Structures are given as structure tokens and as C-alpha cells.
Length: 111
Image (tube, rainbow, N blue to C red):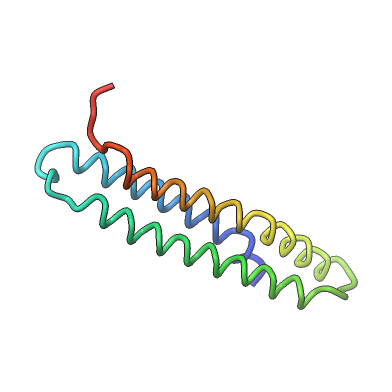
């Protein structure tokens, strides 16, 4: 539970970012020009946001389960839960900004 709370949101963002980049590149090059980039970006953004929210909830549950933990294993899980509670909202915001940026910004332009 604590591992998912700690690593779920960053992993969801990484998958969203790589997938969004790949879809945008595929839509700009060759036969993939008819890809529904906005629809795919919206679907992956919502999926990644759901994973980030689930990771935040998991971190809160792990935190509450280890509030009175004594000893190294319980304290380590408690620390990981605190980190998960801190980073899940941040990565949720990053996921939303990344997905919205993919939808709103021009997909293909020469720089």
C-alpha cells in the first residue's frame, strides 16, 4: 500500500508524458496523421489522474495504519506514506497540466 502511495503518481505521470509525446509525434509524421490526439490525450490524462488520486488515498491509508508504529519497518512505511501524501497532489497537478497542454497546444509545428 505504501509503495503504491509513494510511486503511483510519478509512474502515472511518466507513462502519460511518454504516451502523449509518442502520440503527438505519430500524428505529425507519416500515416498517423488521422490519430485523434486530443481524445487519446484526454483519456490518458483522466486515467493517470485516477491513478494519482488512488495513490494519494493509498498513502493516506498507509499513514493512518502506521500512526503509532514503533520500530524500523513501521516507521519506514510511515515515512513513505508521508512522502506519498506530499507528492501525490503535486503529480496530480503536473498530470493535469501535461494533459491539458497536449490538448490545447498545437501538435505539429516546425521550430
